[in-house]
Amino acid sequence: MSAAGDVPRTEANVLRGHEGAVLAARFNATGEYCLSCGKDRTIRLWNPHRGLLIKTYKSHGREVRDVHVTSDNSKLCSCGGDRQVFYWDVASGRVIRKFRGHDSEFLVDSALLCCKVNAVKFNEYSSVVVSAGYDRSVRAWDCRSHSTEPIQGGGGGETRVRSVLSPSNWMLIINTFSDSVMSVCLTKTEIIAGSVDGTVRTFDIRIELKIPMAVGYTLTCVPIWLLIREISDDLGQPVNCISLSNDGNCVLAGCLDSTIRLLDRSTGESLQEYKGHTCKSFKMDCCLTNTDAHVAGGSEDGYIYFWDLVDASVVSRFRAHSSVHDDIEHDAISEFITFKKPETIMLPTYVTSVSYHPKDSCMVTASVDGTIRVWKA
Image (cartoon, rainbow, N blue to C red; front, side):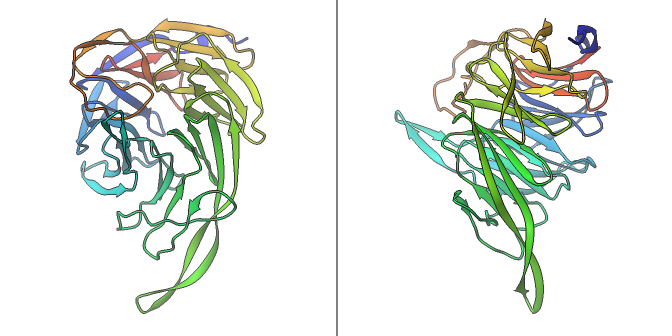
């Protein structure tokens, strides 16, 4: 059993500026900066160690649900309630491109419900953005293309992956899910996604072939994305967050039965379960520490939990965020935008996001209380 003193639980800074719930907070690749996004339709770049706001990005028309930055800190991608994936230049704050495709609308109980994009990630080379949405699909977008339309590349097997070839734009659409896709992770050759349908699915996708294609008066070779295989692990409970271990061997899956599950990435075998927190209604992050010694996750009562990776014992538990009044109707796991009369409510204290520093014993957390908090050992 590992010691509780190894984990961050001392509040070092509180980052304030968002007007309303903060839905995600993410360290950059070096841990020097972090990005946050939220209900106020903004993305904010911080130096969390000094407590400084560096830049605010505004262009989204609805809440921003996720954000990710490239390893060289030059570009970022974001997504949310306006059904598009935004591709930004970090230095200028300019939106380079908006990728359209997650654009479904639903009619439920006479209410118009619009599709949200729940998660975004860059690939290792920052050339592709992968997004996950309420429309039950995962989509991969070519950042090098000048097109904003969803051209699809890919194919194979019995999975429902649409295939269209274009010399100027590549997009892969995977729509094998039966409910909202909440979270996505990437390896060099795989897309891993967690869904409310209770599955964690792994798609082995590789650029295997090149075929000749005429582009203007030039004959050029264009790569084809091939879906080699799909592996589906059914956990039997809605999955609202997944993350990879640092050694790449395991997948951590946060489920709506107040259980975080550790899976062997190659076999899908359940290795361990972590309990004690409350996660029944809202999307909340979970992750492993940078040494893979502990599992970290938020709770609907505003607490942060740390579990020992091996024996699943709770090594630390502390209140990180408090209750707050808000004048909006807040979405639960339905993840829809609802058009109802706003009313003042007491929002639960739940922790929306946890992000662990890549090297140090340091973590940032975010909540519906409108703050990002920096924790150190």
